[in-house]
Image 1 (cartoon, rainbow, N blue to C red):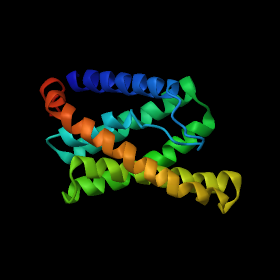
Image 2: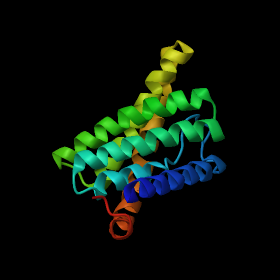
Image 3: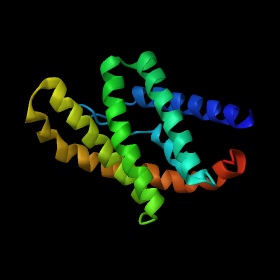
Image 4: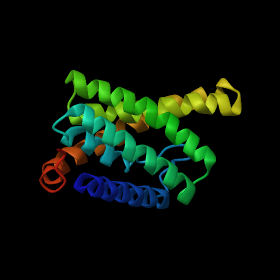
Length: 169
């Protein structure tokens, strides 16, 4: 029961971060660029669990619920579609990188940011039925590296406090 309450609290924090992110005009004229603030919760869940598979399940659950709820609250059905595509690509890569222990938290976060943008670009190609969206990819990849690095550094700073207060059992 306690863990359910903790995960509900983390979902609420992720939703608040989604809302804050929706208020920040961070596009640089390129559609699809966001800071990815809610992904900080995913990163913290991946790194706080004593059992990595349990942390991955919890991170997937919280992120999936966050995408649906924030899509209905602050976005549209298309935003849910794009967010799920990006989340599935990035989550798969982040869990794999975390398990192989080849990357630091910053590296895992950067991979998540990059693959999130790749996933969204693939969906965009199908939605608009053109490969022209691939021209955005280099800019999106740079943005994914930058935002992933910032979130990874933030995650490293927050993780010790996170473990103290919300301990994954």
